[in-house]
Length: 186
Image (cartoon, rainbow, N blue to C red; front, top):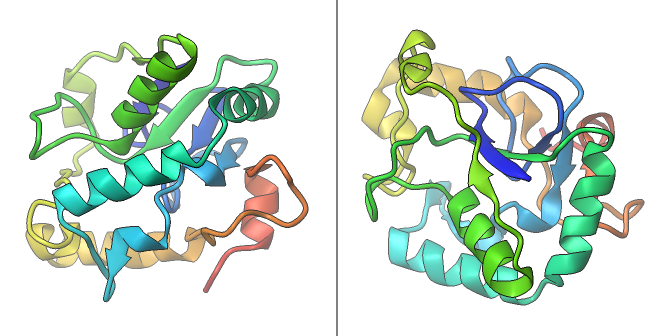
């Protein structure tokens, strides 16, 4: 299993662990809701601060069975190697710029000994995308940091915002993109 950014990888095996996927995301990805940061991660429409996020996400992961989570992810990505997807683009500069997918990778390794690495993509590829990335805890929210262009991007991506609660039809908490879009929130 690997991790990557929506901004860098559009290939097979994508499994979203972000609150929503970009509207430009190629179809065919799955969603693992149990690894999406819960409602505690946003207060008043803004991301919580870094320390609150780290504590909240640690509590969320502690409530999960890592082997069952891995099995569900692998089943959804089959026959491809799973690639856990979120927004932030490396390189990481802790604690100001990182992504919760690194926490997921550390959790899998610590709990069940599975090494989950960032997909090797040339760093220059991020520059070719023409869109900046600001970590959500940097100053409240990315739109505030990036201005109107980012706000417009988030508005267009909002159509794909996924509900955080587990999907009633999927006991695994991992669903296909088509199932997720059927249950999107507007």
